[in-house]
Amino acid sequence: MKRIGFQLKVKQEMLDDYIKHHENVWPEMLDALRAAGWHNYSIFAREDGLLFGYVETAEGLDAAQAKMAVTEVNTRWQEFMAPYFESANNERADEMFVELREVFHLD
Image (tube, rainbow, N blue to C red):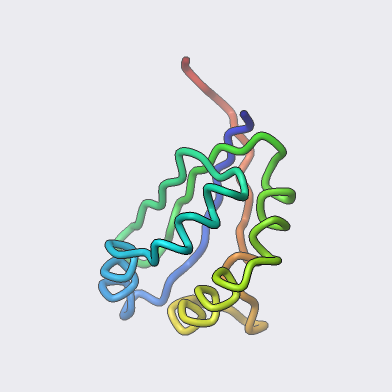
């Protein structure tokens, strides 16, 4: 498994609603993530809206994102979540991941 850390930025004034939506992610979205090989997926939030995500995949972030990009439920989820994110180019949140370099890991 490849361990992947990434960051995104949610509009600070919309953070509480963003968190509420993630307390009840659509079951079909969860199923699609699992089918696309996303494991141990977590999102952490700072009070200013900065998000840190962590996911494990067999094939890396690009492959995991490509598998999700072709699902109808992901398209609906990204459209639903779009207003929450800071984006200069109206990108989908799943296209704005800033992948971070792993510098340490303890098994």
